[in-house]
Length: 499
Image 1 (cartoon, rainbow, N blue to C red):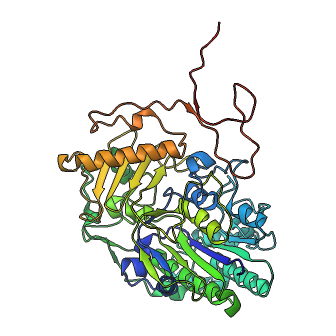
Image 2 (image 1 turned 60 degrees about the horizontal axis):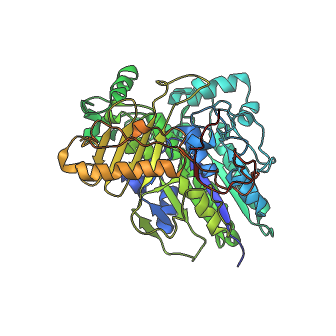
Image 3 (image 1 turned 45 degrees about the vertical axis):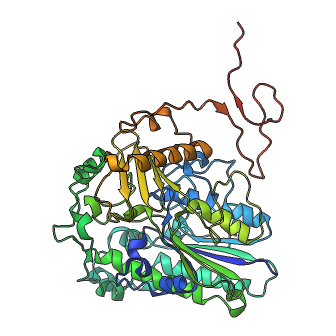
């Protein structure tokens, strides 16, 4: 049987609360919802980090950003880190990437330079889009199209938008790849519904009076939450009043618009391609929208920004639609795709194949810092989170911690970290998280993660074992420091000093 193609579609700032099939809200995400009807919908999928570059690092390198390099925005992966494009190109795939990249260590727009693992004829990051615009058009795109009147007066239609131009290139790529011998991997990466919220005026008309009901989490007092949440709420006041309704027509309009652009690309698959193409859709993270009195995204682990949509639609006729409630992560996406393609994932990738997932498991979400280039958003706030089917444990290294019962408290209002009735479950989750941090070689781990005020009998952990970096299939052999020879494995650095 021929190796499958992959059409990988992603958006920016679109959590499950912004997709109709997840939220039940009238958000006009009909094309995404159709993929869910025909595919595997993961109901507890989590980003690796609720901020752009580290989230994309998890997706496209298969390694948590804490060790692949981009532990914050505006930092690139290390030169010894391979990406999805490299793995698939070296396996004989034609690899194309169209749209927002945000992994080159530069700013939001990128450098305009195509990495060697992707086809340069289709590369189209933010810098490439800017190069097509005049200075006046750039000013309009970034800060001049904020009302229906602005859009109409400047004759803005879909052809002006980055999203539509991304779709055009994707449609062209699919047409060019029809009836070709080699399989393809095409990534289509949209900026929408992320700011600056540019879409045709007819979309904005629909949402002038639309208000998103956040429920009780709009009125969270934050009394039993970490201090940095309260500082965040003070620095960036929520626009949501006591009625609990979030009103942002531009955001909702762009959410609708990008769904239609996704529909264009999916519809461009030829019948032959449809029979042998996996369509994968996800987003990097969400937007707080005033939930828990917070806006934007950052050092919090609430589902509003960490639980992301993830759908795998299989080739026609290969698998019946289903929903999966088991927690999964973006860290699982690359190894899953590799196994579907018949590529053996290297040891360095910690994720698993989630298409045939079963049994209990936990997934980790991390946060370290928002960004470096613009030096914004609170500085260094290390957070590690462990999500299971029932619970979410959040360790905020410099302040207080959190525990939520996902079944009984889906709004994440009641912090149970000091509740004695949950002490056994909490401590077991804590051990699982610490073990996972050790397993993935988290470079930010320190014994302070184990010594929390609520863990009265906890013992500090010393991370003194020497473990060579797992093989990635590309890097030179790891050599022992003591011998200069290829490593023989794990050792504890207890060599006696000679004076």
